[in-house]
Amino acid sequence: MDKGKAVMGSGRRWAVEFTDNSTSPSSRDIPDPPGFTRGAHGQDESTVSKQKKDAEANWKAQKAWEVAQAPFKNLLMMGFMMWMSGSTVHLFSIGITFSALWQPINALRGVGKVFEPYKDNKVDLLAPKLAFIALNLVGLGLGVWKLNTLGLLPTHVSDWVSSLPPAQEVEFSGGGIPLH
Image (tube, rainbow, N blue to C red; front, side, top):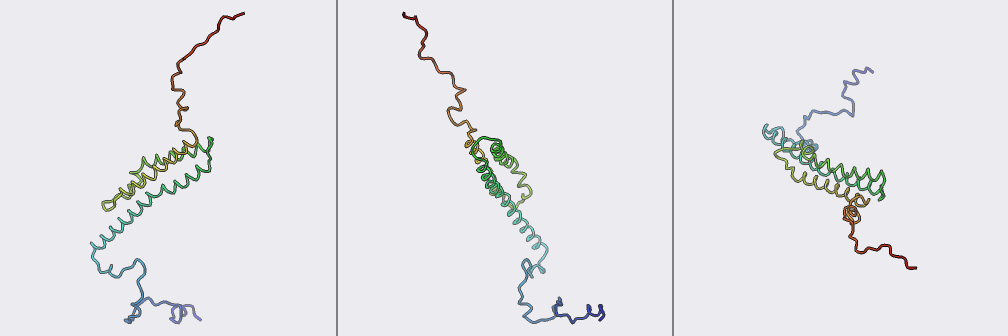
């Protein structure tokens, strides 16, 4: 059998015919695939561009919320690491605590840079920014709590004893004359 004739022949059962020559309603009953709309072909340019801008604004708003909720994952990880480091003062627990304090501070300093790619007239970034700031403040509070747990915050009166003036002498006793 000649290879060229076998390929060119239409005797294969698995071949798919891509041209739609039928006018029967059965071929029209097949639903359109996701993302395809038949009405998009007849629309003018302004409607299509408006839909693209709306889709881009929705995408930017969705991504802004994803960025705003990202510190929550960091909170869970950092909380677990703090729990695993224990409540004694040693190098590992101090390093974890420093990291728990440093990451939210840097994130709070760069809020504008983080949301810069999503800035648009149609996208309201106030709520995502506030959520981002709130979650980072919770992370900062977690780090301060760990400092307190380690006893590294001066929260007791005994932590300030060195700055207190010495007590006034109320009574004085001295040597006396021996009685023999």
